[in-house]
Length: 116
Image 1: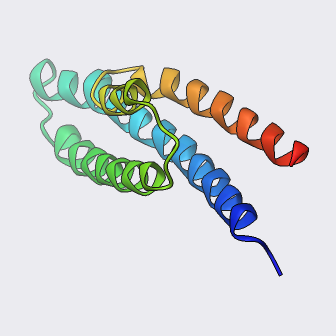
Image 2: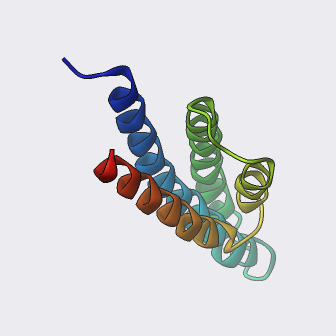
């Protein structure tokens, strides 16, 4: 039988894994929207690009918020880490920096699991 602490540890690793992936997805769709969709709409007069990319980014952002809420519910997050997670969602390239922080946290958590 798996102990509660091992189950919690596995859940934290799983949440970090998903958050890293979703962070990259959200950041990529934001960059597509800002660097492709908006210029095509305003410079080239092609509003369909924003009409397609906008809702895709909106869904990616909602998924990011959902994953963030689930991950934060597992506990062990400082106030500065939470602020970084929130800010990273609205700044272009922030998601990519955020993913590196999440990767480091995941590595630390993996190391703790190996020593336990």
